[in-house]
Every structure is written in C-alpha cells, then in structure tokens.
Length: 229
Image (cartoon, rainbow, N blue to C red; front, side, top):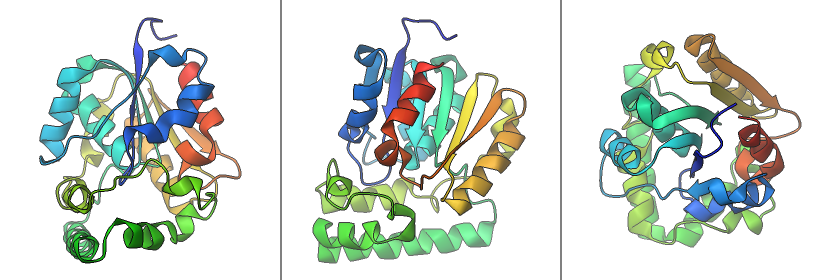
C-alpha cells in the first residue's frame, strides 16, 4: 500500500478543467487527499510536466492528455511520483510521419476553434464515437471556455507536439495502473502495449462496458482504483 499521507494528484484531459474530476473525488474513500490539477498554459509539454512536478508529489492519475503529462512527470521526475494511474492515455505517436500529420490536424482544429468558438467546438468534439457513452449535458460541464486556451493545448500539448515516450516506459519503477474502457478499442490496444512495455511494475485494467472518457463514465471505478493503491 502507498503511504497514507500522500495526495492523489488528478490531471484532466484535453479541454477539461480540473473540476472534471469532481465525481471521482466524491467517490474516493479519502476525498480530502485529492488535488485536482490545472494543466499549465502557454508552455510546451516538457515544461508543463516540470512545473507540475515542482508543485506536487504523490499518487498521480491522468486522463488522456492528463495521462500523457503524468507519464512525463513520472519519467522525468520519478521522485515526485509514488504511483501512477494512466487512463485512456497514449505514450505518443511513434511514427514520425504520423506524428507530423497529427500535428497538422491539431493545428487545423486550433484554427477552427479560434474561428468558430468553444460551443461549436464542443458540439464537434463530443460527437466523436469515443464519447458515445457520455450524457450530452454532463459531458459539457467542467470544460475550458477560452478559445485561446483550447487552441494552445492543441498546439503545445497535442499528440503531434509530444515526443513519443514508448522507448522510456521500461524506466518506470513505481506501481503503474494502465486503464482503458472495454469499448474504446483503439485505447485498449494502446493500454496493452503500454503495460507490456512498462513490465512487472504495471497492471492492466480494462473497465467492462465503458468507453474512452472513464473519469466521467465510471468515476466510481477510477476512485476504487486510486483507493486501492
């Protein structure tokens, strides 16, 4: 078991505010230990992870973009991470051409957001099949309301802007839970590869009947995973 005084540091996904973790926090056995983390803005991936590590130490859990950032914290600043929970997270786009294409598409979407606004973006973003399991009203809560912040996350922290971390995964020595929803087929595959690359310190968790947005779809499951550390 992890030391009882350590905090749960909860990093949200792309377009979310820290309050997106509220339902998970309410389900935690020790909610007072939870610290929902705000993703830094205006800086790149490595600098964002550095700033987060400077401010926090404990059990890190990150969803999607937040998982990628928490992973970078664990690799670059392992002394700040007692345990790691990666939820629907991709260690990076390994192929250079695919990564460049993803960067181009992220830039296009950032431009689109700046032209069309946050509400139109959420309509478009949440219409993706990976979010089919979400209630349409609650899915829009706890979202960034600044076009500039959304565009900045895409340009500086998107998968196209991130150096892939696959070759470093075996460096992780702390306990790591790698989590994906059963119906999120792409990320189930990524989770299996991630856990295999990390090795003995990892545990693969596939959540039955769930999709990509596990923090919103299955907050009680995520809380149980955290509480069990």
